[in-house]
Amino acid sequence: MCGIIGFNWEDKKLIRKMMKVVEHRGPDQSGYYTDKNISLGHQRLSIIDLSDKGKQPMSNENGNLLLIYNGEIYNFKELRKELERKGHRFKSNTDSEVILHAYEEYEEKCLERFNGMFAFCLYDINKKIFFLARDKVGIKPLYYYFKDNKFIFASEIKAILEHSIKREINLDSLNKILSFRIIPGEDSILKDIKKLLPGHYLVYKDNKIEINGYDVNLDYNKNFLDLFEDSVKKEMIADVPIGAFLSGGLDSSSIVGMMSKISNNVRTFTAGFNQERDEFKYAKRVAEYFGTDHYEVLVDYDDMNKNFDKILYHMDEPILNPAIFPVYFVSKLAKKGVKVVLTGDGADELFAGYTKYNILKYPKFVPNMIKREIYIRYADRIFKKEKKSLLKFQVNDVNNIIRNYFYEKSNINGGLSFDFKESLPNFELMKVDKMTMANSLEARVPFLDMRIVKFSEKLNENEKLKNKVGKYFLRQNIKDIIPKEIIEGNKRTFFTPQKEWFNNGLREIASNDLEKSELFNKEFIKKLFEKEKNSFRRYKYSNQLWCLLIIEKWHSKWIEK
Image (cartoon, rainbow, N blue to C red; front, side, top):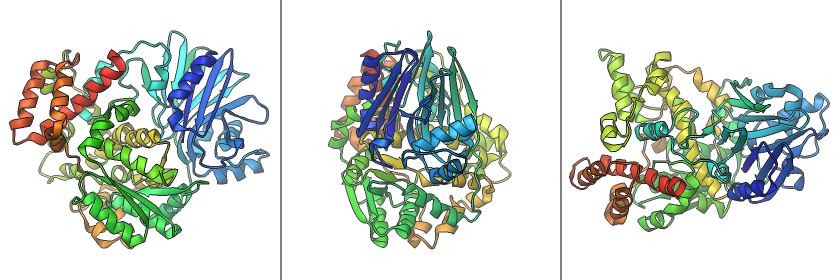
């Protein structure tokens, strides 16, 4: 993977500072280009064609187009053959160069042909046009700032902050993240920095930006298992060692099972908090079943505490689920042996894997409106009434954001649509991107191959969730690939021992930090700590305090300091 940065004026000192900030995303090669209208920087993690021919910024034959790119195009070999038939000539074996030639041939419509994960910028030197694009699902991040005639973009917010912009928290985003644990839509946690939405491209020209959406049109085999195998096979293409994250659940086990069918040399990596819990037991069972070269890392309170500030730095935005910690440590473990890992992310959002979807399948005599409100309340981490006491500013009701998805679709598909378009890119994929990249490790997600995404959209609700069994379709199709107990097992939520952490010392740390908060009402915080210690619903309150602690520490680091 890589880090990309750029802005609409020339400043070699600033571009080098910004590149240094995202060096962890691509420590293998550095490159930049400047003229009076532009500065572009790139940090490369070499995965395909490790030679200097893959160095970026990369230019076309005429030298009028420059590319900086973060990601992988999995159908690049087919696209290359198509472009060669049209007369294009290539100087490298990279997928990067395919983007340049595809843009020459098809302009913005090239995006309709890409099956992959990406964020990139193409710059037309003659026309002085920036063309930025982000993959359809939002696997790779892309932030931008446009104010006072300054246009800046980067893979990470912290790079944009190297320019002297005003740092101000977006209060509307704070309101949303307290409800959903994510910030839906294009806003970020900072007032003047936005995300380019998944499946969108941005054109900057003559000091104006225009943003449009696009769709992907791909032919695909209608047999799911063939499609899944081809997806895994394509995402195993690399000129470096490759492995997989393995939790022992259905999704990661499916990936490892298919990898083992393709290769007899698969390495797997597992992280957990307790050797007796499912994440180790089931992962080990799957690893033994497929004969993988398996590695484990146990994460304890001291590991979390010692690495808290480092992980917070790499978050960029507050990521409120403590599961981010095992992802960091398993990435650190995997980096010792491989440079690329495959993960099972995305299957829950495509095939209805989360148990919460059962709320939307309550008996028919329960009105849809009631089902949806129960579902929304289930998703709400800190209720509106609580936020009125917690925050020092007036809050709006943000739950219409979820309700709008139900107005357009039936119950299950409404919930899936929100999770796929909002929760997946703004939490699950963000978590994996930030923590793998912190360790200079590339993560790939075979379930989010656009052909599989399109395939899942054609399934009806009962094929996805049947008789309270989530991912029913997926279970039926992979039952001959992975162990029976994994197929028949219930959805296992990754356990994070917040209560144990609070007892081990985190309560005092959180209390000290939150008492000094500029964001939160101290009286509410005090009552929350009392509930966390004394209430039978301790997990709820420790979860809320964890969320507030992450936000407070983020605010202290990036705003106050």
